[in-house]
Image (tube, rainbow, N blue to C red; front, side, top):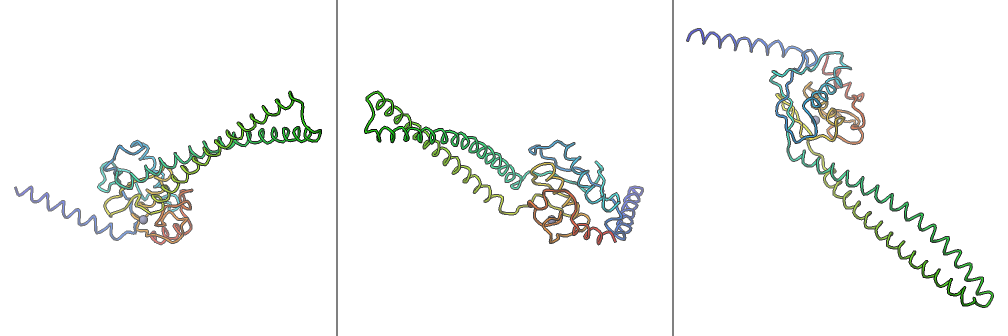
Length: 265
Ligand SMILES: [Zn+2]
């Protein structure tokens, strides 16, 4: 019993000492060891893929700092979790809509091309037909056989015109469908939502579009773990919002680097 008490005291003393020395260092001087915590299988990524994204996110800060800021350790208390929540569902919905919009856009383009070539043929045939008619009219009328031929041509042209109009209807309904999808997309995508967060003892990732985006979200949360807050420049990894401006590349902006430097001093 006594021995047991002694052991507990030793452990507490050790922990106190550990925190004391760590607190004296800047966030850049210590390595943050992290493990992978909850790993929801509903995401389109393997554990290895997630680890590889984590390594890339590490490099975003480690390369410019020239320091080993983060390291994976399966035993680490600090965990990076992959959690499925409403944001994850929203991202999935956005992806589906995005695919749908792309498919509809391709369908529209193909049909439009078909329409344009048919329209060209129709207009040419119509011009030729009208020319023949006006020539015969100048002559005071066409003989019976020619008249019949011209009437057949006219019927054929009318059929072509109707088919073209049907194609226009199809094109318009595809366009309406695409516009509705775009509207839905903007309704969901227009509002910012948390793709991840940092809570001091953990990082939680809720959604990502692809590997590059995941690296960006992880790098953003790693930045918070280093003590970096949000910055103004929308091109920055540490901007509060993921947008077209910062999602196209995964490298720190001058403002990100400035914030890192401030943390590492
Ligand atoms: Zn943030």
